Every structure is written in structure tokens, then in C-alpha cells.
Image 1 (cartoon, helix red, strand yellow):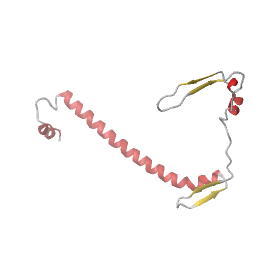
Image 2 (cartoon, helix red, strand yellow):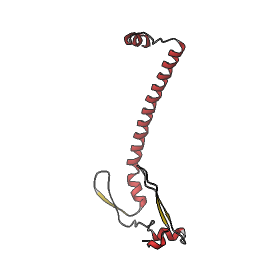
Image 3 (cartoon, one colour):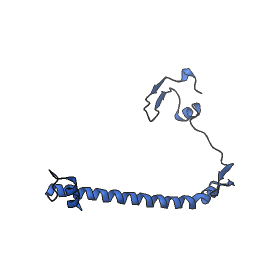
Image 4 (cartoon, one colour):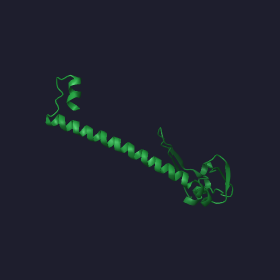
Length: 126
């Protein structure tokens, strides 16, 4: 790690949901800082082992083999997620349209809310 005499100052600007440090280091280039503080590393991909869809362990020889295995599973899940999101947005859109209609009815005087019972208002709206 860096020695105490290599660091000029450390400032901390943390918040509740994030961490933020500022470290001033004189006389070091960006690449030297990455090496000195061990901020960058390489990962070997020679031993790639993962669970398959059916729960069995499998060894993959390349990233492409891994991607081919899980592409269809992920693709199906993305389609389901898209359908869910579309349904949710359609419901939200319908709710907003109904709210706008309600507000327009109140503004235009078509629907009167003052000094009326709730049951009478429901009958008028439906």
C-alpha cells in the first residue's frame, strides 16, 4: 500500500447511501496510483464453473459457451419482464386518464362535489 509520506491529504465526503473519498497524492501518474492503491486487477477465466438451468454444475471453456448456455433463459425472462412492465404502465396510464377526466369534470361543473353525500357522488360518476 501507499506509505504515509506519499499521501498529501485524504478528504471524506460520505453520505448515507454512498462512499466518497478524495485522496491527494503528489508526484504520481494515474497508472502509478492504480498500481500503488491496488485499484485494478485481472481476473482469470480458465476456471469458469456455474450452475446450469437444472441445478447441475458445469464447467465452461470460454465466455461464449457460458453466454450460449444462459441466453435463452435470460431472453425468456426479459420477455416476461417486458410484459409485466407494459401491463403496469398501461394500468398507470389508465389511472392517470381517469384522474384527468375527473378533474376536467369538476372544473367544467359537470360533477359537483360540494355539499353532497359520498353515495350520491359515486352514483353520478358511474
